[in-house]
Length: 252
Image 1 (cartoon, rainbow, N blue to C red):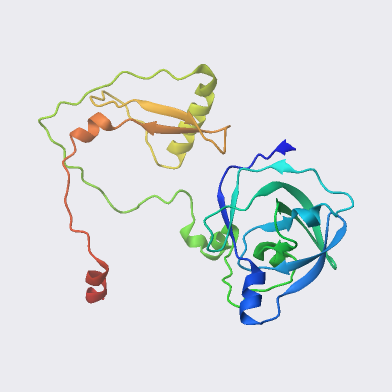
Image 2 (cartoon, rainbow, N blue to C red):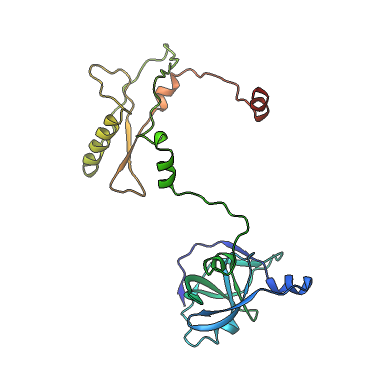
């Protein structure tokens, strides 16, 4: 049994058999193929995971290898986690639909629960009320006039109230690693072309240092920040009353 690479967590499962036995309603069942073996499953729209009883897992002709999992699975209303034998990835087939899903194996029980997500992907259930969320590209295309460049605030000049009694300080430059310097120069040119920063000529009494770090999701780019802790000391704070929702509604 290999270690599963997923982080530990908590998952709650609503057991469909209890609901059906109490209400007398027919429990939604269907037959699917799990790892090539036909299994009768209960469709549990309240479950966030697929869970298979170990007794059913042992009946698979070619059972996939189990991996250890740190996830804790709880039945609805229970405070005791279900004992798990492991987890595996497999193809789940129903008619023409095939999806790859993660299946947890429980040491107790006699059936398999199919989660809401897997059932929806298999077209076994549909949501009566659903909201269609457009992609980022669609939103940018629909509101093209709002997504031009970086989005600088134009035709507005901000006044900073500076405490003249605090003397400006030119802090020591923090050396940048040689392998990052080309990326820093490219980022500075990019910011200048986007009119976010501008080149200054002449003496500069107040010089805060920059801090450079690589972007996590874009390691080929860098993020440049300015350490403004000392300059911020000289900025006098403006105080404004934040309106409440009632204030806004009353004014509207």
